[in-house]
Length: 332
Image (cartoon, rainbow, N blue to C red; front, side):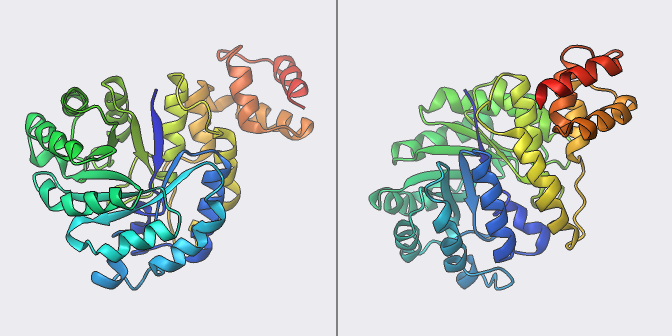
């Protein structure tokens, strides 16, 4: 089984500078938790402490983000923040604990894992889960990264992420890194992909097929540089594999259409694969049939995306008006 960590509010914050506004943060937490996304990373782009230590003052303060998160702590999702090992301050672990977070995810460049050990120790002592991101994982060979992962796991780590920070890895490389790490440790191995070579989806599939337990994503692909694998695309792909069935994909697509995309229009952010196009890929429906689907969805007042998927499961070659109408009526 594979699960999902959404990083929109942390890595995705790079598309607006260093951190989302309080309004968008609240909106995204509402949308993600309502769709049953299991793990959510929030805060500014640099992680807890970056506002003070690194001068990320274009973002909201850590306390503001943590205050917003309070009303979403009981919705069933694990909420946490990133923590750059080079910016570690003990008080940030205390703040995370007092604010009810489930985890802190420490990050350091591959090969620099030892500088994270004090933070991992203190996070565990505070009763939080200690996650870890091996940033620029490709700086080490798969075998070297596996050895580093073992040392970190022995220190009490709860999860380790292979982070393709520059989007440079090929699917075969992802497969090898994932295999090596899953053989070396008993804790969950995650994969964080960037899309600089247009391979984020292929790399996520490679990670899944080779034992990854968690995939990192961002809504509408929002992340540093060329972006991440879109959360909604990841869920659609994984549901094709019979995974992530507990996540409400249709609710997520509606949230993007109705709330998130309009909000991001003000920031001139372009969604590379809008929900309707994603549904065509999910269902195998050709775009030439869209007019009749839209007409039927409007006449019967049913969800267009669900109608496309349901009908396409029966006939993708030449769905008749009668089949579309009958399916729409059944969805009412």
